[in-house]
Amino acid sequence: VELNVGLLGLGTVGAEVAERLLAKRERMAARTGVDLILRRVLVRDLERPRGIPTELISGQAEDILDDPSVQVVVEVMGGEEPARSYLERAIRSGKHVVTANKVVMAKHGPDLLELAGSKDVDVYFEAAVGGGIPLISTFKVDLIANEIESIAAVINGTTNYMLGRMASAGISFDEAVAEAQAAGYAEADPSADVDGFDAVYKLSILASIAFGARVHPDSVFREGIRAVEPLDFRYARELGYEIKLLAYSARPKGRIEARVHPAMIPLHHPLATVEGAFNAVQITGDLVGDVLLWGQGAGGRPTASAVVGDLLDVAHSIRKGSFNRVAMRFDADPAMLPMAEVRTKAYFRLRALDQPGVLAAVGTVFAEEGVSIASMIQKDSIEEGTAELVFTTHPASDAGLQKARGRIADLDQVKRVCAFLRVV
Ligand SMILES: NC(=O)c1ccc[n+]([C@@H]2O[C@H](COP(=O)([O-])OP(=O)(O)OC[C@H]3O[C@@H](n4cnc5c(N)ncnc54)[C@H](OP(=O)(O)O)[C@@H]3O)[C@@H](O)[C@H]2O)c1
Image (cartoon, rainbow, N blue to C red; front, side):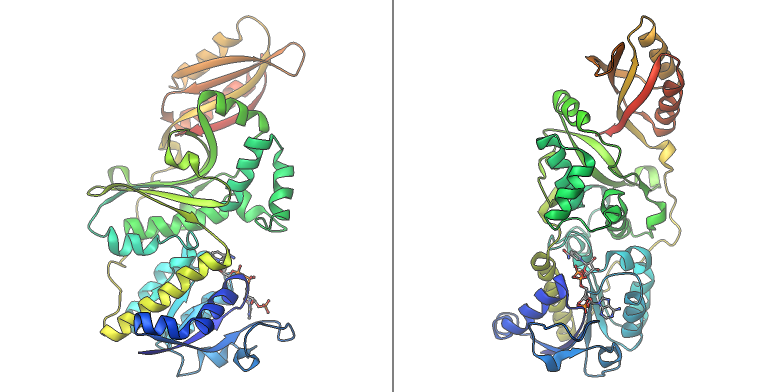
């Protein structure tokens, strides 16, 4: 089978995709029976030298979208628009699409998938979550017999790298941002990563596929890592935890819970051992139990692995004359569990006057808000006349934890609630 491919974008990911298609064409054809032919590549800047034959390069999307010989459009441009419109146009003209675009898939994935269903074409997006880690196909194919119970993941490499550096080198958030930028992990504007947006997009895609429901990114609870301080890593370690940006989704009693926030994860938990820019996703299914996928969640080559793998899948389904649109129905308006009702354990660090009665006052607030204390440690404070108090709690509703947090901050004897983290 021959498959004519149009590529939108020739950046970090696109260049690796083009390289693999051009350099390994014969080998892939011999191995898979599919001849992937790169027809044309869209870029913005026509002046920049590129490592591929110039006749393949174009500055006009029409050269790909309106070329009837192009059977598959690969979108690796990024951004919401015009990427979404290009994908829609490709689908409407009967082309299969492969995309690495998490923003488009998180916000518009179900619409594109449904449109593709009506046009008898496929939308593949393995690369949109977790780079080269095979996640989408795992849900779509391998775990399809399961009711998925939960997804717990470290899916943002940039923040994982930063938190790792803050833990091991004791550096501040700002220093960690600077290091991550120097290492090429963080953008000039790090907000998408450090404020949790990137992880929210990925979780919304995973939860949508896992639960067959539109889990819109706006309905995912989001808290980034800006408030985590170096001291918290020390206490976390003492208490037996690592601090990670956790992405978690589950469906307790029919309602979908979906949240991204920094969390203390027990040292023995597999997600606690995910180092540097790596990603890991733990999936729990009712038949299979726990499955752990771990690997490079970003980078041109790992991501190209997913993109080219999708292309070969498309080619196979064309050859078989059956498209892989299984299990892509989405509950349009699923019931979501409000964050206030989510129950977690928690960690509080506060600075209080070093006086009698403080513990009693704090304890009363916790009790009144239905929060039961699991442990308390008192530490010397850097500030004269104050003490640093660290509490961990048993599971309590987030509403109760937040009310306690506010009321403790308002106590006369308490100068500041320095940190609040949810605990796994
Ligand atoms: N990089 C990763 O590690 C990674 C991992 C997983 C997923 N992804 C996703 O993959 C996609 C691409 O990421 P990337 O890192 O490869 O991006 P990138 O390096 O910025 O490359 C983007 C490419 O698209 C072209 N482009 C962008 N907007 C365009 C427009 N309006 N018209 C024509 N061409 C346009 C750019 O052209 P010029 O070359 O002319 O500027 C460039 O070649 C994104 O959706 C990203 O989220 C990336």
